[in-house]
Structure formats: structure tokens, C-alpha cells
Length: 430
Image (tube, rainbow, N blue to C red; front, side):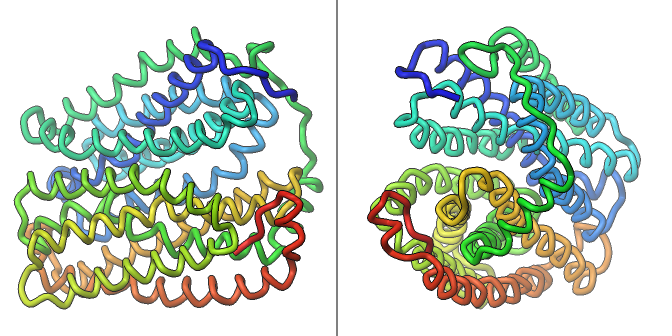
């Protein structure tokens, strides 16, 4: 497909609608972070049962990445994005009306499915509507501005749950999707020349061969472990355990907990463009950046967990900032995958890499719930600072595995890729 020669007003309007859909998807994904305590009371569930909400959502999101990419190639961004928007709206409405734990679990499964159908679609729209020189900037803006959805899921959602109640708060959130579905129908086209693009169907054999070839390259594995190591701490805090940890583990007020989660999102937004600039100018130091960022996260978490009593608020501010940087740092893994694979394998490599952070996040979310149930059996009102120290310490196992693998595969990747590729225009991995 030829790139448009210039950026048009129509291109920006298409991007804005796609961005809003992604922003609302992030909102729905993150809305349970401040509702964890309310959910334990509404459904009368334990910490591990609460963690199952996010576990299912992460499993579905991760499992859908490669299939969604194939669906977009086959049916176009417009159709898949519309399907995802409708699915998210119905799922969030179902979550609002759910009165039993099984009903709520089913709703979160479909939230994960709808969420998985947004970001890839928007990136495809960007690549179709903008000139090649504009694509990196607009892609970065998409990821950064989309995190405003998590801001809306912090303080405003906390207020809504406290003043309107569970059902009303989540129904209002779900209603956002109705307007967006109309906007998708009226505004979005798959390309400047086609309202709907349809691609050729892919055989199972071709898909399997592409995935196998991608995973065989050490650069893809390096990207996978980069994604694994950087993202899980921020994901666990933003999706589920941040609010309970700050309120019950660190004895902060509800408003302070909401502000800390908001600050973490702002750190994500600020770090994205900065890391993008650093990666572009220092491509041979990408794994070094990841190792440095993860090491900083480990150091600050250690200070918080070892602090006598509850940690001071300024230290918690530092914590959410460095943890927030880990979110956009995970995107470095995709850049390594891009420069380690030919164009025809980039989608499959990206799908593999995207599993890393979500597998780690899933393991952490489950482990925190299990450890909390072990150390503080009972309801969410029984959570203690000691219980949260034990639970959050599970992260050290994941960091140890992730960091050792990053170091291992960056050595292998540097052996495979010759520096001459960098001189020819391709960034080298690691």
C-alpha cells in the first residue's frame, strides 16, 4: 500500500476517533483498579478470587493478540474496531449489572476481548492514513495519549463509585461506547481510498511457519524478555492491586491512593516520548536502557518494602514514577523485534513479544492474591501492611528471571546481527 504524500485533516479526524476508542478501552481495562475493595464486598470474594478478574482479562487480552492481528489483515481496521467497541460496551454494562461472582467473571472475559481489538487497529489506521515520516510520531502519541483513559479510571471512577454506587458508575462508563460506535461508523475508513479493506485469508501452515521463524531469532526472544521484565509491576498496580496496596498496605487515604495511581499514568505519558528519542539516537543501548530501568524499579520497591512502618508519601511518589517508566520501556521490546525480523514476520514477532509482559503480569496478579489470602485470610478489610509486604515481594522472582534472560539473549542477538546493518539503515538489537 502506498503511503499518502501529505497529512490531511481527514487523516487527523480518523486518528482522533481511533484514539478515543483506544482511550476508552484503557479506561475499561483499568476501571477495576480503584474498585477492588468494592468488588470484594459486592461479590463477597477473597483476594485470590478478586485477582481472577484481572487474571482472566489478561489471559484473554494476551491470547487475542495474534488472532486480532490476523483479523485486521483479513477484514480491516474499521470492522474489527467496531466489533471491539460494541463488545466492550456490552461487557462493561454486563459488569455493572452483575450480582454474582460468575456473572462478573464472564463480563470481564469479554472486556478483555474487546480491549484486545483496539490498539492494533489504531496502529493499522495510522500506517494507512499518514505519510511514512509521520507514522513514528503519531504512533507514539497514540500510546501516550491513550493512557489518559487510566487517569479517568482513577480519580473520577473513585468519585463515581463513592457517590453513585457500583451499578450507576459502571453503566455510565459503558455508555461511552455507544457514542464511539456511531463515530466509528460515520468517520472511519480503512484507507483514504477504501471504506473497508479486505485481505487474503491465511492458511494455518503459513501462520505456524511465521511464528516459528520469529521465535527462532534471538532478537525476538530478547524483545519478549524485555517486555516481560519491564511491564508487570505497573500493570499489577494499575489494573488491580495499586489501590488496595496504598490504602491497606501503606495506610494512605482513598484520595491519595487515587492521586498516586494518576501520577503513575502521568509518568507513563512523560516517559514514552523521552524513551522514543533515546532509542532512536542510541539503538545499540536498548537492552542497557531496559536493564537500568528495571534495576531502578527494584531498588525503589526494596526501599518501600523495607521501610519501618508505612513508607512516607514522597517515597511512594518516587515508586509510582519509576514503576510508570517501566510501562513505555516495554515498548523497546517491539523495536528490537522490528529490527530483528523481516517485514513479513513483524506482526507475528510483535504478537510473540506482546505475550511477555502480560504473562508476567498475570503471574504476579495471581501470586499477590494467593499470598494475601495466605497471610491475611478473610475479606479485604483484613488486609495488613505485613501481608502486602509478603505479597509484593513475589516480584523479585519475576525480576530475577527476566533480567537474567535479557542479559542472555542480548549477548546472542549481538552475535547474530552484524553492526553493518545499522549502517545500512536498520537499528541493531540490544
